[in-house]
Length: 431
Image (cartoon, one colour):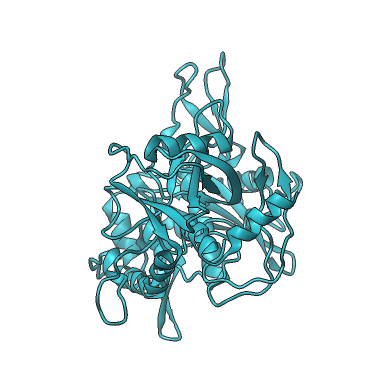
């Protein structure tokens, strides 16, 4: 979970036994380096940390009741929470940008209920209980609460884009915002988590319009947190889809090496961990071993849990993947790459991987992406290759780099480079 970390707690580990090899939770760390991550990107959503009681005015049922009254023109309800709405277009959240200490810093483009209604008044999208999705709530102090909603305005057309652009807002790819996020800024990380959750829900609604049991049309219930078949003979409830993915750093403990791989879709010089979707009827550990064997021909024994990360930047058909990270210890070393899955896979020494972490200028890439978002919001979009942001100080390209700190792969690899993995393995052997 840490990039270039230092730590003091030695062993606070908890055992969770799921199959032949137990899974270990990572210890907690109290001493932070400048690149310490309190949580993964897209985790720690500040408006979704607790589920309100149904009777609370900001709970989904109460907020939906207030929404209906607002839509009917009843705006004088006492103690009504404020509503803020985040529009999405083609999976992209509305964003703006401001300069903080002369550095560009993006923010989500929240609209008030009134402003959103005005923007959509002459568009193909209606502001209604069938289009708004409850995202969460937060307190502004003094008993004032804000309820947050998401809405898909893809069908609204380019007129809305131009109108919002006049207010220096634009719809930005979530992946671009991910790279542009200052991971040392808790507020920015929180906004990224909100955007990820919202995209997951809205894209899920887009791909689940019809019942998979009878073919009837699905309708929103529980303020958009669930769907239900409209067929009176079916009435099947549908819950948001989560696709679990195992991602593992395979380790050759005897020779102090880690297995990294490349896919053809990767930008040049990028290497990362192995990963793959779980299959029905298998445990997490079994998925780790199966995927490693299928993709590289390497047999894995012990599997140690590291952490997990929501990943809402995959394809719209799988809007909410859950990356479950592990260390996996190799029992065999000969690599046999499945060329249909991978472009290449190689063992890398700890020193080589450490150099890749040191050379890759993640902060530079973040600032470049933040600058790109700033330009887009001002109406000037410019192209930028992610790989060109990772240069050594001499200006030469780094021989390889790994995904940035927004990805769980970075946390897995950094933990191994900095010795956290060995502490986990040691704790395992002492149980």
